[in-house]
Structure formats: C-alpha cells, structure tokens
Image 1 (tube, rainbow, N blue to C red):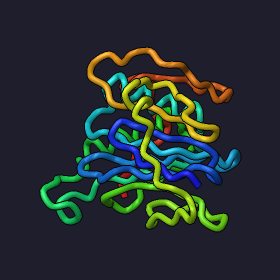
Image 2: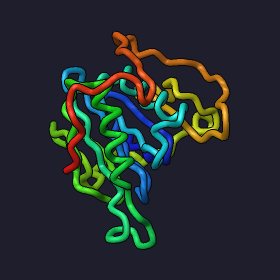
Image 3: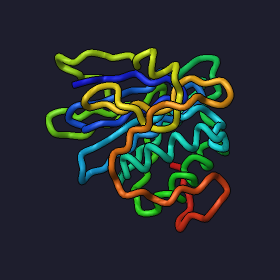
Length: 205
C-alpha cells in the first residue's frame, strides 16, 4: 500500500486498495477525503485555509471531483488551540464555504463532517474504508510527493506512478503548464465559486 503525505494545496488519488494518504498537520486548513464507492477509487486534498475563491485552488478541487466523481466526501476541519497550541483552527465561514462549494457541484454526494482534528487521512484496512484512523500501512512506505511534481504545479492531475495521480503543488502566481492526465470519466459541469446554487444547505456538525 502506497501511503502519501500531502501538504497544503496538494492532492492524491488512486485505487483505494493501492493508494492511501494523509495531510500534514491541520492548523487552519481542511482535509477533503473523496470516495467513489462503486469504482473503489479515492483521493485526498489538503485544502489551504480561506482559499476557496483562489483560481488555482478551486480548479484543483474540481479536477479531483471530475476524476474521482465521489459518492462520499469526508471533511475534517482543524481543531485549533485544544489540539495544536498556537493555532486557531478552521473558521466557520471557511467551513461553510468549502461545504457549500462541494454541495453545489455534487448535490447527490454524501458529505460528512468528521470530528475536528490535527490531520486527515484515509486507508483501506481488511476490506474496510477508514477515515482519520492511525496509519496502518503494513509493509508499505510513507511516501513524500515527488519534488518534480510538487515544483511543477498544475490543477490537472499528473500520474506519478502506475497507481497514483497527483494534483496541485506549490506555486507562486500563475502556475506553469504541465501534462494533463485524464481519468476518462464523464465530465461533471464545472462552475467557479459564486456561480449556480446548491440544492441543499451546508450543515455543520
């Protein structure tokens, strides 16, 4: 099992029997776990706090939604001071914005808020899909994202090995072009923030 660690602005996807991932520490960010239960295909995006209006951020999320087409989404907000001293945690306004953005694009998906925490992850253990449990990766290795992929940011997915697709990356201003990886799924309608409307309200747990 490949087990990846993603920093702010990075995402990973792949078959859930072959790929799993965790965020680095959540100080004010939100972990977004996406799962397609029919395809058994999942991913994780480390959402950078207060950036849903940022072009690069929402395009990266939408690309992951297109590729994974999740039927389930699990959101983990940063717990803040009670877990990580000196950090404020995720703001309510940001939580509502992220949840509303996801509901707008995937109104039929189940979106669940997990308890606030200091990290987000997903893994398949003994046939069970687990979210935010201590890492149990057996003989697998904890993999850092390839520096080349991280330093060549693009919201399109890029294959970094036979199973894993990488999204986002570090960027400063307009990201350079990078090869696009298309999962071959039927495209969902993409709308930027503030466009369209959700069929259901975002309820915070």
